[in-house]
Length: 130
Image (cartoon, rainbow, N blue to C red; front, side, top):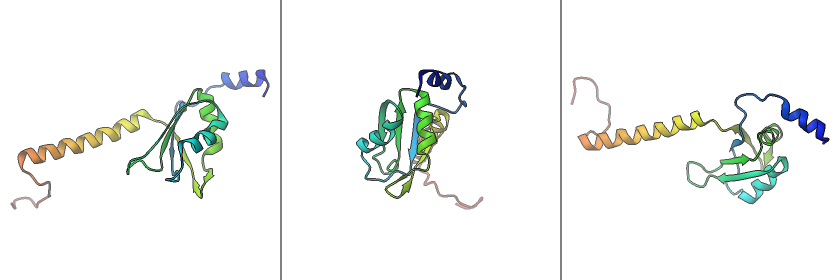
């Protein structure tokens, strides 16, 4: 690509949701970080990849690019890409969405602590019956 064309691409405005951090879903459980580096590295320099390894996060990964335009290019080319008979779902990382999930987990943990403290089993009972 010519330098003038690259400079022109850098000047254009990006939508507000575009981010250097990508959230990748629907990954094969046996995919390695090295395979992800080779797949996503085609679109630019990668700062970090984190592959989910717990029961709740298997099949997901975060890919952090050095440059926001490289991240956008990767989303444009890899969304719906078939990897080991699975179609990738790639989203831009949204901090407020993920904070909401964390706070919900924290709320549930706090509710369990309060139930244990006050001896409540958490079952819903009809009004007026004990």
